[in-house]
Amino acid sequence: MLADVPVLIAAAGIGSRLGMNLPKALVEVNGRPILERLLADVLADERDVRLIVGYRADEVIACARRVRDDVIIVRNPSFRDTSVRHSFWLAARHIQQPSFVIDGDTLIDPRAWQAFRKRAATMDTLIGITPSQTTDAVFTRLSDDGSHVTAFTRTEPQSHEWCGVAKLPPRLFDPKHDYVFQCIDAALPAPAHVLEVAEVDTQADLALAEAFARRIDAVPRLVSSRAAAMALAA
Amino acid sequence: MRTGFCFDFDGTITDRELLPYLAESIDLADEISVLTRATIEGHLDFRKSFKLRCRLLGAIPVSRVNELVQDVCMQPDIVDFIRSRPQDCVVVTGNLDCWIGPYVAEHLGCKLVSSRGTVSDDRLTAVDDVLDKGAAVSALRAEFGWDRVVCVGDGMNDVPMLELADIAVAYGGVHTPCKAAEEAAHYIVYNPRSLCSLMSQF
Image 1 (cartoon, one colour):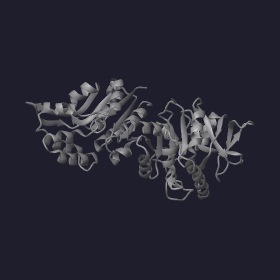
Image 2 (cartoon, rainbow over the protein chains, first blue to last red):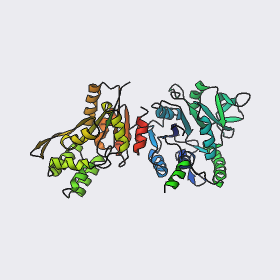
Image 3 (cartoon, each protein chain N blue to C red):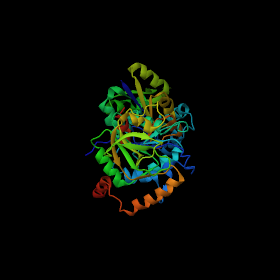
Image 4 (cartoon, rainbow over the protein chains, first blue to last red):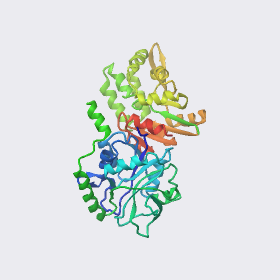
């Protein structure tokens, strides 16, 4: 059995670029909030899940608790003046081991997550990348064989972008940086893993995410080992 | 780095509030429940409400209270956590030493800081001191030489202790923490296993 690797989900931000007056994790894609999809479908087998909340925290917490009661809530009261980097720092500062980080506005294919966590089992660092698609990407420069991320760039388009998902060593989210990718820079070069995701930073992203969610939802739901165990026990 | 853990007792370690439970034995459960809920949420001053509830519950012999408390369930994960490091854990409760002291000593084996009552002929005759949890945590920090204090609570009277903690945890395993406790907290958890998995990383 794999050890309980903490999973940190950043869901504190206002999502101003999306302009929906709703925390992005609560945006519904094909009828279900992104956060519900993360907690119920993608992370069903993860036992140590930490959700960083700020903007409209009560609603984000309520959404999480409708799915499961074991999520650890991390408060980011200064969400208006801080970035995702600060949220991850708040959640990671009391953790002594490598952790997964996920941007709370990221729609992930549950099967892709299973492959990612399995590959990450023996690694401290694994960077999730996806074919470039968003309008405001953090692009990843890759090694010649495509196996490693060697640098991040916001100005020179590349074949792939960072997808907001990674496994990272502790103590990486140094307050001297503004952005998460700047923090990860210290761990580069690092292995890359392509996984299918959709982010919802803007309205244009949302249309892509809708199509992505319909594709995911058309596949019969994976039965998680936890759900299977509960079914056996019943 | 030496880390100390301070736990609220009623509704944090125990799976129910004790005063309404004690009140069942003298048919005052509803009345005490209303007072307890309003106090946890901060609508009533803890000190006055606690003294009033003690006056009402003082009708029960102290030895009978000790027996009743023996039947209260504690959350097993939290008990295991405390028993694995009793020298670093303290129960910080507004409840009375004469009511829960023997129970805490027997089942948790850690230090207890509580409100204090006078007992005469097996009856509670006075509440001498209602605990200020903020002052208690400051004193404990000095006494134990802790570098860092983790506080876990849910009610209005836990807020001063949560505000002084290095790591403050609002715990909603028994009932939802009061708003002020949530706002004083770095973490909010709703499940005893999650609480212990969080604390074991500190």
